[in-house]
Length: 405
Image (cartoon, rainbow, N blue to C red; front, side):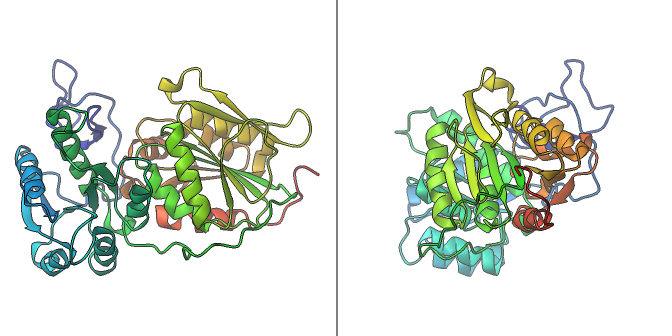
């Protein structure tokens, strides 16, 4: 069986008789804190790309000797991590990569000789490895963070610093957690996938035809999946795309603009009262409920503050609304994240005759949402994040009478 650590999100293989008197399942393989929570059955797929009983080998790439030393000290505080080697810039990292063969790479962006983003693309093409970008540029919601995730990084974080507005102990725990989670992402999930050219993309006008509603739920680790999915969705299928992303509203604003630049779809921040149209994607934040209103005839988008946002029910609510309004013309997809939000809503979409997809847990940075769907839903199709857009496009290809006619 498997149980998720509530402290760091790490995945731990356990035995049914392993539970201690205090209810814990021993110590987490990533953060060493007591593991609490309900166990899941482990499927037939390979859950851990790295052996959970072995140390995780880390390659540190940064032009600053001080930063390399700082990351090394943090890595060496964990009994589960070991430094495989260091590189001063991207060209050196690419030269050392075949010999070091690390499980995870930590990578700076601003470096001489070869910068981090160029290095990242070469890594993903030559010898894909789970990569966490540590940089002064990659705060969550920044353009540089989105670019790093687009190029294949599994996670990003601001470079560790004594000047940061959080204590060093918390920074160290975050670094250990991100490296440990990255090690459990399959190689197939991190290969560099080229998005459409960065030249301005010809946008299709929103369509009056609205045949389908596609509801997508994502939480922690969801940026990377959405970057692989949204730019590859076809705008001419007569579908409106509705996304709940568990992140702050200002990050959703920035992310929507970034995705809109890459996509043939029109990607917008979700706004209350907007008519739903084919070929448009609306993204809502973690503290919002997103539903479809058909009471007046033409479907309208409804966005309301989440009454109980800490309970994480926004994905379920969106999918129940899509199932009610569009029936068998609804499509649902659950991506990376913690918790179980989305499993009930996706089951409802499948029950009314719609299509349900779930990201393969092996390609998720945080596997809990996807694993909960697989354990509790009947009939969803499991898909790698890189193939999700193709599957959604195929599900929308069957011509049906428009539901709003």
